[in-house]
Length: 407
Image 1: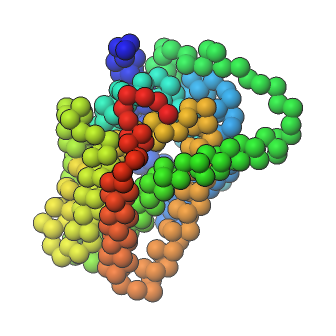
Image 2: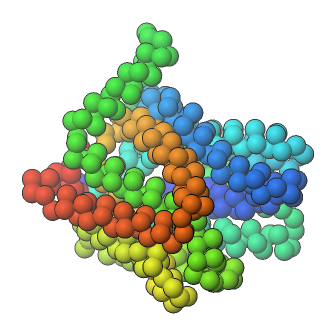
Image 3: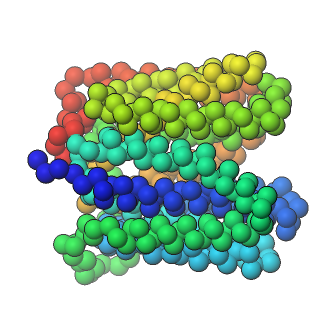
């Protein structure tokens, strides 16, 4: 068996990590810029809708294009497009122009994500993916912790524009690192398309649906993971209101709790990185999902600062298990030939569900006490995790969790 080149993996992780670090700096900066221009909370809230809407529009057609084109080139050009879009924002005085720039940036990100997922699956052999994904989770948690801190420091010593330009530079740096990586699509031949764009799109979706029908076990487990993520997102979207108005904590407490969750995720990812050979994919998925659900349930019934700390710590640590386990499960079971299409179709479904769920929880929060809504969502996550654990224990499904052969 050929030894995997971890130097290349480190370069890829550095490129992705720098890009994610820039995302967190940009996230804080753009919220402040829009609020400074408009003074409107609704205008700031609109920023959070752009991503899901763009995902629905872009992911409906982009997957087939990504599968047929060079993934490395797509990653480089979308990084450069994001750098240009972000760099222009300080010069756009109109909220309409800023929204338009954000829309284009979101399109680039919607192309980058499935392209990078497919590139990772091609670069990293199956026996090394679990450890790679655990390190990737560690990188993501580091960006989550360090990004806002860097943004805060830049606001103190400079201006918001300084943070934005640094963000643009981070995308350029990421593109340069990716440019140095090997081309995994050298043998890829772009077939001449004899059919219309509509027919090509229809055939792409048919292939994804056919794969889903053929691999019902994979879809049932991965679908539960996606639903788990949506319920978690719905709870996260009400986090500030819940912690301050229901539990009765302060803004400073909330800031500390978010840091605790991020540190917990980093510690969990570090632990997996060290002992990855001792943990199976099943264990990462099962323990990760069940104990993350337990963390959310502790948080949902909490009536004190210490209970919320315990809940956030537990869900932070085991969310790292969950992330590494399901990324590896996905990479090992979806053929790279249709991975772009699969990732994009899942993105469309996820974004539509996300829009309706976020609107729904906002309405429910006005009709019923928020505590009830959070407890119900946490309980649903616990039920999903128990169902997945039962699925993982089914006999005759070991091929879905193998770390020696590719699907």
